[in-house]
Length: 588
Image (cartoon, helix red, strand yellow):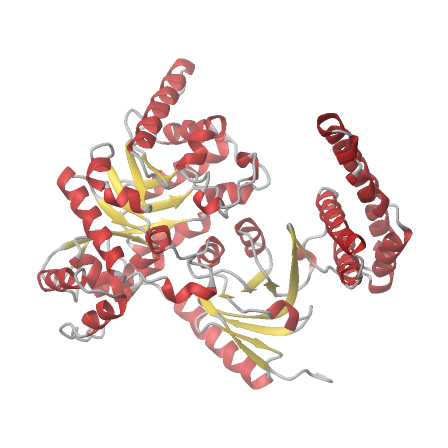
């Protein structure tokens, strides 16, 4: 390659293992991802027609908004939107976009983005405050124009040939699902962490991903050769031929291992060294994982995050048939074991535009989880109907997220009873009985676990949110990442308390957060009394093997000591110096 740029290694956080090699496509975030798509010369005129059509449609939309604001709040406030209409008629702005389409042979979305950025920089340098603030009008118009363009047969990243590495400042889960099923083979993201939903989706799809690579979108240009090493958390820009060959060899070896028939599968429960039974279940997020589930030997599905179905159909809500189809498939795949289907956990930072109706200053502590679904019963009932229908002839396990009060459980039961009666009146076949459980992921729920246990049939502990809420730490914020401590004594005490509350009421308690899949926590979780873990299917054989090396009677005493230690560091030190584990025997 002539004039090849110098190789550069960037460090981030590996959130989905594997090696991806490809060409970069940089995504700019403007409410929606904007991609740079090459346009053939014969398609340029069509692209300009698309642009002009979008301008006219956007102007009509702004006029409708102006009219509505005028009726509600008066003409003085409505006049603000005149500036937006003028911008869409401004020849400087319009001509610059069309010039970029023709000169660079690019799609209109990217041309709008580039022109807006260039003009916004010029506005930012103006001394006059009033004129400088007009740059915000420009960005508003750009967002509206891009949203309009999305509805006019827009170009997709799948049109870029070859293996693509998407480099983005942020990536919403719905885009991760869509792009991960196209020709994107790797993600590099500036924001996010291991427990973000985008990271979970990347692992579900087997897409190597590195997050937390600050400033990467400014270092990479489209078509740059790039390697994503999700295991080590490394991104290599402009790799040399030697480095490429090393990574190709590593990727080939991993592919051979993946194709090798598994000898780990066992339908029997996992047993510890001293004969304690451990039920290993599987977390399922996307249909693609069901084949892995069937090979894993997991005893049921411990968590299906139904909001991922919403993300798959975004921007449309799933229909009752969409819900029914996937729930029945999950219940049948898990039989004779349970399939725990969690109702919508939307809100917070997850997509929920069709449900929210209003914006929130602090959405993570706002209308989300069970609060949102109970507040929007017209949407929630569609899901409950499908759950009861899908359980016909079986017994569905229904799980509610973010519960913090007994009243929420009672309202959910009452709603389920209403939906069941509604189906009966319609003559629709449904489940005769169901099991109702809740996620324990709010400290309030952990503290009243004994009371909640009398209202439900099972618990599932979601450590991702429980740790975040208990320690007041944003799990995806790099500035406080070191404060996200699963071994904090407060977390250990809450886990122990929830297990004891469930045991006293005679209901099963599982743990389905990322903590369950971390090998170094397995012995401690067993020592705290947990006997059911739900993890990604590929982690099931690993945990089965490790469980056989744990002596629960001995680790229980150590777990009790850990709950009395004052810091996570001391807990970690105590676990490190427990009696050394015997090395695993090589398969014979």
